[in-house]
Image (cartoon, rainbow, N blue to C red; front, side):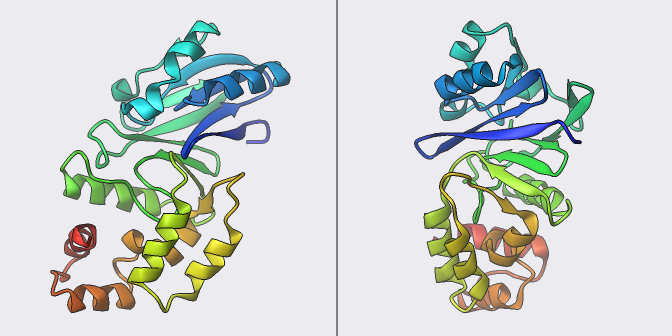
Length: 234
């Protein structure tokens, strides 16, 4: 996939994205719409599509101005079929339906990049506002089955708080400090392999996490039980 690129934009702790080629771009969660339009103009791109990872306003607030200042087509994230695609310059951006944070959550996968919205953060996972923890577990299992070098681009930069919680839950894990030291607020991402080393909510099969659940007297017999138990820890 030689000519498709990703640009990350920040608005507070929100992270927005342009997926772009030589001429066209797709905006995802375009809350940083002014910077995104400036980048579009600098790169002489045409904004083809505007879409979102889910319907929360802190992700959709840029839709209207992006559409007003372009000829882009709005793609309703909640109408994508699972495994659907967005075509850009002959390349396919695959859409995964990943209910959990919200019932309408989706992730976008192109090349070695996964744009996860509020499903999977760098170092943690989203709150389960849908109330369906089991669906959330299935969504996470699906994502972590992707190749370890897949880059995770999330919907927010919560890295500092995430690392602090990970250290609290797993104080003897040296990878957490390495991850903290490598954190770059100017370019927030991680690989799935790194997430499996430091993100406690993906480490439900690790002995240290199982021991933690035992200390809390929480169910831990199956992967799903361990997930549910981890998500219940305050």
